[in-house]
Length: 91
Image 1 (cartoon, rainbow, N blue to C red):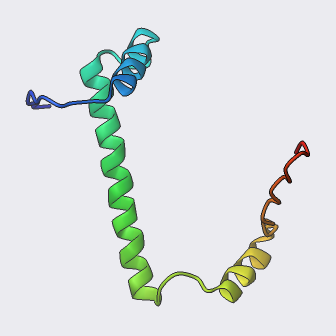
Image 2: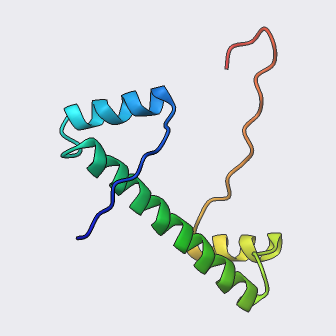
């Protein structure tokens, strides 16, 4: 694979976390860690674009009734919104 050298500025905490990951053996080098992270982000961006195209071709996101029907057909329990804890009470 051909590579190019670039200079980037990173928040110190992000850099520290990346270096810790390399020391822990989760990547061979800082460059490899950054390259893997960027590659993963590119995949997510591509998937997001694909999903947007698919939604445009099929009439947009599911409406509430369609989502309920799909959940029922798939046997998925609808998630209930979590109640906020009141002041003075532990959750």
